[in-house]
Amino acid sequence: MSERLKIEHLYKVFTDKQERALAMLNAGKNKSEVQETLGQVVGLDDVSLSVPSGSMYMIMRLSGSGKSTLVRCINRLNEPSAGKILLDDEDICTLDEAGLRDVRRNRISMVFQHFALLPNRRVIENVEFGLKLRGMSAGDQRKRAEEVLSVVGLARWA
Ligand SMILES: Nc1ncnc2c1ncn2[C@@H]1O[C@H](COP(=O)(O)OP(=O)(O)O)[C@@H](O)[C@H]1O
Ligand SMILES: [Mg+2]
Picture (cartoon, rainbow, N blue to C red):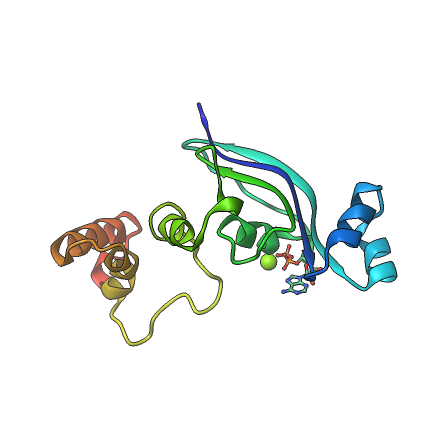
């Protein structure tokens, strides 16, 4: 199986002056030491992983360990401080605004823990919404939304 997603030496420090923090991490200092010395929060410290095509990959660790930060780097809701995120061998970190918009619209999806539903739309319209943004025709949207609702046993709530 080929690799769909590959992350190489990813770092995220929550500051716009990250050079000193990155230098400390590279010298082997940890998150607490960086926080004490510079007052900067380290979100990710040298994360590497790869996800083969067609597989499921779960990120599980203690609260505050950086799971959300990692996921938010993959779609660049968080701007990574250093490292590579290769989606089908293309580094997401180097995409311009248009490229990023295309990736977010067509190649990556994210379900947020909160604010996941649009309360002014029906269930089926919520399911259709992402497809609508992609420019799919109304008929195809409805067909696909009905299919996936029945897959998860929610067709009668549509
Ligand atoms: N926007 C932010 N600004 C500053 N620190 C942040 C921000 N988002 C997350 N952090 C910090 O980064 C670390 C990882 O947080 P997070 O990714 O939310 O962890 P998890 O999802 O595993 O609970 C924590 O120390 C958190 O306080
Ligand atoms: Mg989280």
